[in-house]
Structures are given as C-alpha cells and as structure tokens.
Length: 271
Image (cartoon, rainbow, N blue to C red):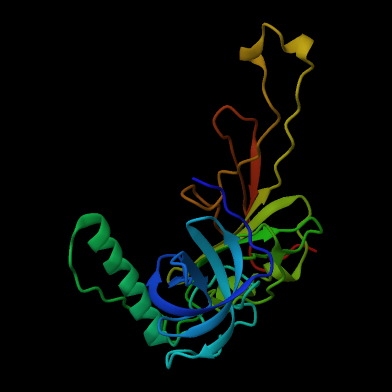
C-alpha cells in the first residue's frame, strides 16, 4: 500500500455522505477519489483541508461549513476542532445525532463483516444524561516539559486541554493537567464511581536502549540485553492499575528489570 503523505494546504469543496468508523464521514473528489473528512456531518457541504493523501484515498478536516446539517451544534469543548484534541469525534453533533451515527457505524460493520442486517440502538451509559462527564478512565500523555495533556488527532503533539468535559468529575478533580510530571510518559486517572475506588497511575518515560560495542557483543548475542523498557504493570490497556488512597505498587514485566507505578489520591497532581 502506498504510504500516506502530507497534503500541504490544499482545500476542496466537498459534499459529505455517510458516516464511517473513527469519526470520519465519506466524500468524493470530482475525479472519484474517496476523501475521509472529520468535523463534518452527513449531508453537509464543507470546505475541507487535506491532511493526508494517497492515489486512492485522502483524509481531510472540515475548516468551513457551507451548508450545515440540522444536527450540528457548538462543541462544548474548545479543543474539539480541526487541529485540536483527537479525543472526541462527534461533539459538533447533537446528542441524539451522536448516538444515531454510532449506531450506523455498528450496523455497517455487522453488514460488511458478518452479512447481518440488524437495527442497532446506542443507549446512554449510567450517569450520561448530557453526553458529558461519563468517562471513568483517561490517559494523559506527558510533554517534555512535564505538562500532561491529550494528543492532537493522528499526531504526537500534546495539547494542554485543562479540564476534559467528557471525563468523570472525579477524573478532573485529580488535577493531573494542573501540575507537572517530570520523567513520566503518561499519567492515567482511573475511577469507579459506585464503590468510590480511584487511582492515578504514572507510567515512567522509556529509557533509550544502550547498545554494546560490536566487538563485545560478537558471539554473545543471546546474552545482550537492552536497558529497561519501563512498561509499567499499571499501564492502561488491559493490565491492572494500582488502586487505593495512597499506596505504591511495583511490578516486574517479562524479561525486564523492575518498573514502578505510583498511585495516590487526593491531591494527585505533582508539583
């Protein structure tokens, strides 16, 4: 497959079609090439800036809405815009429209992958009355200066988001984005509202691999080890997070020296 390349500042006027997985909507250039567009809604006509391009597919962000959908609303988060945080796909849609769009994506997958025609309904999570304040686990990336934030869409850039509107209030109360986290790769807030269990999980930054000189390593490749990868057992994504009010936990990863996960509450933000 041809690798995607930056598309420069090229802009296109596009008629937007059906929703696609990942917060995109499908449009086509006059020549027929598919363009996946963010920050738009089905039925809209937009001016879109290309961000990636191959011979068969392009990606773009809607920078101006020429004909708006009746489902369009003002996003409640100031960072939900082209070039902003990549954490929310549909804040520019009404809550009812968001759920219809998500249901349409699931129905598409059932039809295309399994050949099933099913009517899909997306129901709100407990406590999700306005589409905000529901997320109980948020992982913040940490910049070189120690500030914790969220990544720009399809980028390694980290944005200073302050308070996240979709995060549960207990996540925002941790104050993770208000402090500095030197030496950390990421900081995650994990909460369970009903029993009141909550934790802040710090993953240390990875240490660059140390290579042995070629002469010393010759004939001993099986014994050469890199320095710790520091992949914490508390790292979000399937592994257990440390919990409790103020403890500290350490865990060993397979074949690697020990890394450490810190967990505490309240007043979690580092100085």
